[in-house]
Length: 425
Image (cartoon, rainbow, N blue to C red; front, side):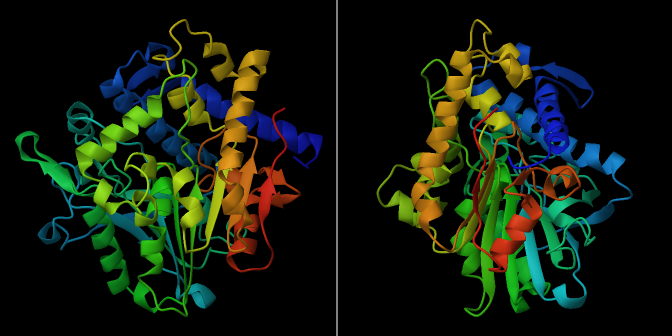
């Protein structure tokens, strides 16, 4: 990373902090310690979804509390969604938060898909529908718009004056499911929520956009990949349309025991929620549906320009899919997960192999002139909604370029952006 020693130390502290809060955090009044995570496949979702939700909340809360007065944007439920079968897991209405653009950005739209894990079994989906990840009854009435959603030029130089939307996530399958389980009161309607939300936004003026960007973080980042070409299809040919995925490169990688923790979980998501028919056909025409839930099998075949922002050592994947307690029975990874400085040489080597796997999977993607790439060496998860990582005095740089400027340069074709950080440390 080309930056001053001072900047590097600041970012090292930020990245380490993400690791610390992953290991011990408070959620809904209950302290959850990763050391207590002894879960089977059914329990995997509940704990890891809490972890993902906390990471996203922590990102927004920690900076919102410290950063001036962030803009808060109210919730809008989609009134006609139920008639279209577009409902959350519990049957409640889906929703979004919209802050109108102004000036030169009045006809530009940024649609950001919320993340928050997945549910892969009846048990985990029944639990999920009692939370804001499965029911709009528990949605916050307003959300802070920071980072890529900020309305301040000094915080968000290229998109501050656009129409900026955050679409809430309440289905548990990255907006792809289309099924139901009436016996358990579960509606798996992510695809219909996606369609209803887009129809609603088109009616609010997005149909007249001269440029549009679909973005998302974590499970929302995965959704922005899965729905990228669909998004392009909403607009006139002359409209500039691109997609951006933050922390969405969930890898089909073996865990530390040689098992397939995340593949097993994704298989449950896809089969339970009926996602197969809504996954990109460029993938499902030659691979099984579970494989087509992994971005590494999709991104190279997208027709629409895509920018991938990811940490090479994605903190969620290290803790929840590479070295979860179910694969690390003796707890030898606990110290390493708390602080990468505690990792043994063999553990560092395992992480370097994971990084190389990610980069190799992006070789073909990165060869396309239309695509962009920013892979840094933080131990982090989601960097576009955090002001301190998106665009601030101490935000991470690669080649002296901050994330916000890299994404802007790519979107507006100011320069080609294919930036990959040096390996840790």
